[in-house]
Amino acid sequence: MRIFNKAEECSGCSACQGVCPKEAIAMKPDERGFLYPVIDEEKCVDCGKCKSVCEFNDNYDKSSLLEKPKVYAVKHKDNSVRAKSRSGGMFAACADYILNSKNGVVYGCGFDESLDVVHMRIDSYEDIKSLQGSKYVQSDMGDCFKMAKKDLDDGKYVVFSGTPCQTAGFRSYIGDYIYKDNLIVCDLICHSIPTPKLYKDYRDFIENKYNSRIIRFDFRDKSCGWNSHMESYELENGEKIISKYYTELYHMGTAIRPSCSVCKFTNTKRPSDITLGDFWGIDKVVENFDDNRGVSSVMLNTQKGVDLFDKIKDDLYFEEVSLDQAMQPRLKSSTDMSTQMDRFWRDYQNHGFEYILKQYTGYGGYKTKIKRKILKRLGRW
Ligand SMILES: Cc1cc2nc3c(=O)[nH]c(=O)nc-3n(C[C@H](O)[C@H](O)[C@H](O)COP(=O)(O)OP(=O)(O)OC[C@H]3O[C@@H](n4cnc5c(N)ncnc54)[C@H](O)[C@@H]3O)c2cc1C
Ligand code: SF4
Ligand code: SF4
Image 1: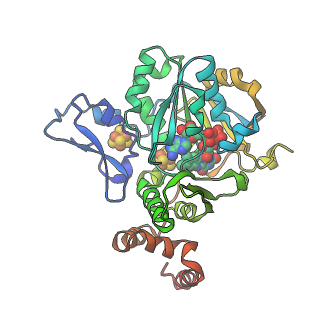
Image 2: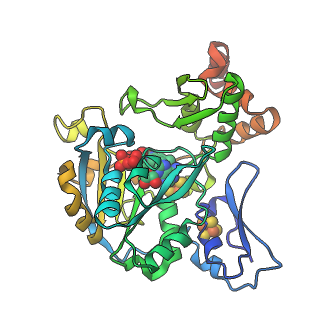
Image 3: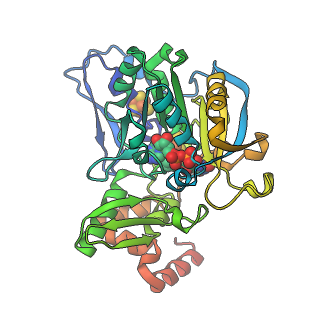
């Protein structure tokens, strides 16, 4: 059985693994650290279920979408919620309602005990902070699709959140359950997702350098303001460090998943009830709304999304805007692959992490910066 032909045709959502009746599929990292399905041919009975569930095609179900999404600029009224959230705290407001008023469960992306980025289930609002904030690395879905389906079977209220390729995979996996009133699917406007290998190697590098374990990692520390882009980490020895080297590596676009360059979800027909993003440019759309603590761009794509918003709106400051006013690049086209990608991976594989950190980011100091500039001028970078 072959599910896809080229690496960019798989987003790693894991729906095929979940649907296989023979448990013949395992998600395994390739040499760049991205998870792909690997089929055990001894167990496979060629039923084709993995191929038909695969969401990485243009035909994801759009039947429940409103003709046009309703769009809002949103800020949670509680500033302490916004401080922990990436943008305006809309996700926490949705989770709060489902957990506290509906006694439900929420699935999203958090950290495990080793600080690896994984998808997880929470059933108490006490645990919401593990899911708040953007993690710029692809999460390991584990058994979350199966667990969420079981929760729906048990009649629980469920919020399932993730990147659009993950929510599309989930929707495809659960089939008709998508129409259940007790399910809300939340996706993100998504720039692209880097490999877990980069994040793991960065952590190992820091822990070796400081000879201390990292006990907290924040991919985008808001203490410097919503619009700044700095990561921070805290070490067991008590040090807190704010840095930007991981961020630089992410933004270069050399370590992102191949499927991101042909992403099927960079449009306004979303595989979700609610889409969340950062409302960049809000100051030009709604006067005096931006306080540099974060504003969410919220698209309500289905009637279920509209109904949920109605229930939680007392927790929010919000302004309705047009879809055009909330437009941004990742709602129009996918991220371009860096032209440096092959060279980056050659360097990474041949010389290791510290080498690429020095060669490709500000960590290398002004000499490497000048060298890069000269090579760029010569057309060799
Ligand atoms: C990799 C990535 C790229 C993004 N790119 C853009 C962009 O180009 N433009 C834009 O406007 N917004 C982008 N966002 C979305 C934005 O950063 C916020 O996630 C969104 O505004 C929600 O913020 P919030 O304050 O409501 O909630 P928060 O509490 O900050 O949101 C947490 C939500 O993000 C999910 N999440 C966090 N990290 C991941 C991950 N690695 N994989 C899957 N789900 C994750 C959680 O499950 C939860 O649903 C991106 C997010 C991520 C994770
Ligand atoms: S996109 Fe998802 S369902 Fe399709 S092959 Fe990849 S992991 Fe499997
Ligand atoms: S850019 Fe598209 S393919 Fe890449 S992680 Fe985001 S949703 Fe998935």
